[in-house]
Each structure stands twice: as structure tokens, then as C-alpha cells.
Image 1: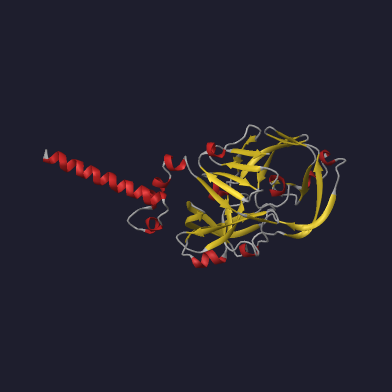
Image 2: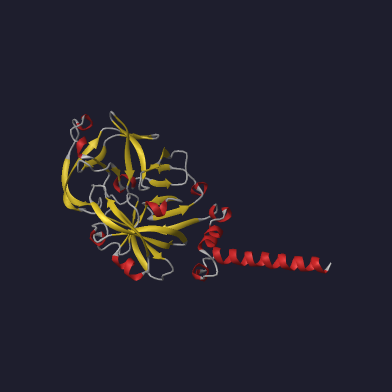
Amino acid sequence: MKNLKTYFKIQNKILLFYFLLLLFVNSDAKFILSNDVFSDSLIQSLCCTKAYKKNKITNLHFDYKNRIINFKAKINDGKKYYDFVLDTGAPTFITDSVLHEHALELLSTTEAIDANQNHQEVNIYNINSILLSDKRIFNIEAAHSAGVNNMAVLKERANGGLIGSNAMKNSIWMIDYKNYEIKITDNVDLLQIPKNAYITKMSKDNFGCPMIKIDIGNFKKLNVVIDLAYNGSVLLPASFINKPIFNDSLTFSKNEILSTGFASEIKQNSYFFLKKLEFGNLNLKNVKCSTSGKNTRALIGNEFLENYIVILDFIHNKFILIP
């Protein structure tokens, strides 16, 4: 009998310990994340239990200037907020400020290529966590290069850098341009997608950037990157300019800031209107587009996307537009 009482006392203490631990984790108790007694893997496993994942939505406010999404985030256990640009067309990049203010582990050195095929040597660092509102994303590889602070998309806008597709890959992101709000979740059912939504399959390129296949006239299943740091509508390689899809197309030119990567600048851009653009169950006519260098990747940017509520479902590989 005595042994039985001792057994139940031990079991009760174990249950109490796990209850308190789960309580602290779900209330964002910061000391747990920095306490050496608990490993990162334990914290992540507790934070990512099915009960926690399936019933939570993170709401993140963003600013929207010159058709670029900009929001605040914290790095590791720091108290300082940094401004970041959301960029699904690139991996996560950090500025000099973030690198100098945090002791980040250098992982490797490699080469990065932007949408215009501009090359830069970059160092890859490990960020333990990035805090977006009440959502903490763990173990993100972040690039840094000598030219990152000179990116036009970051100047006077984002002292932190870019939150790229590799930081988004394990969640579902809903972008509401009209209300300047992003919802992040692991349960698509919480987003209440209407029946009139346009849904198509989404894949990823070698860098984890989301892509869909579109049909433009006689060109079928053209791979296009969903690039939330491109402030234009649809961007096509210059090789398309003489194609029949542009015959009799209305054209115009104007000077503006075009954000497409390392070498973004203010320049005169020529625009055309595609007679027909299709993907999934969406069929559009007279879609504004532009062309760039011969080797430029095809992109869909915020000028097109802002007409919808956009869902990037990295879990189920779906791209959804809600009219």
C-alpha cells in the first residue's frame, strides 16, 4: 500500500510538471526559450503539438507603401523590433544592423541570384528564432551580403532585411491587402475559404520560392514565381516581346520604381496587356504585364495580387485567391 501511494505521488508530480511547462509555453513565457535547462527541440515539440497548431491564428499588421509589404519582427530573444519586407521570391536576408547586433552563427558562404540574374556572394547565418506578433519561427537560415543594405526595396523601409520563403515554408499565410493584415496558421480550416475562391496547385523552386503554372495564349504551363517583393503586376522575360500574344496589344510607358532584386532602380518601363491569362479555375483578360531582361524569371507581383485576398498554403502546396 505504501509503495502504491508513493507511485501516485510521483505520477502527480510528473503530470503537474508537464502541465506547468505547457502553460508557460502557450503563454509565450520568454524565460523558457532562453533557459538552458530546456532544449530548443523540446520547446519546439511542445509548441507544435497538434492541439496548439490546429487552433491558432497569428494576426500580423503590415504597412503597404509602393506596393511592398513591410512589418515588424524580433530576432532571437532580443527586445528590439526590426522592420522587414516580406519577399517570397528570395530566401531570408538580414542587414548589417541585425548581423552586428546579434551573435549569429556563420554556416557557409555561397552565391545568391535575384530575378534579373544578378549574382552576389553571400554568407549564410543561423537565426535561432524570429518573432512575428505571437508566432515564433525557429532555426532560419539567413543570408547577408555587402550589397544587401543597398537593395532599393530595403532603403528607408526595412532596417532588418527580408523575411523570405524559407521562413514561411511550414505554415499557411493569408495576405489581406485591404485591411493590411497577415494571418499565419497551420490549420487551413480556420481561414474559412469561400466557395468562389480560385485554387491552383503550388510548387517550389530550388530556393523554396512558391511557383504556379499559368497559360498565356498558346504558351501553356509557364512557371511563374509568386513574388511578394515585386511591386508590379506580371513580369515576363524580354524574349516574349515579339510573341503573338502581344499582337495588337495596347502599350504604354512610364517612369517608376520597380522592385525586382539587388539591382532595383527608377527607370522607364514598357507595359502591355495580355489578352488572356489562366491558371487553376481563374480566367482573366487584358492583364497588365511588363518585360525585363532576357534571362529574367517570370513573376506575379503585388499589383496583380492586391485585388484579392491571397493564401499561400506551404503545407498543402496550394495557391488561393479570394475575390
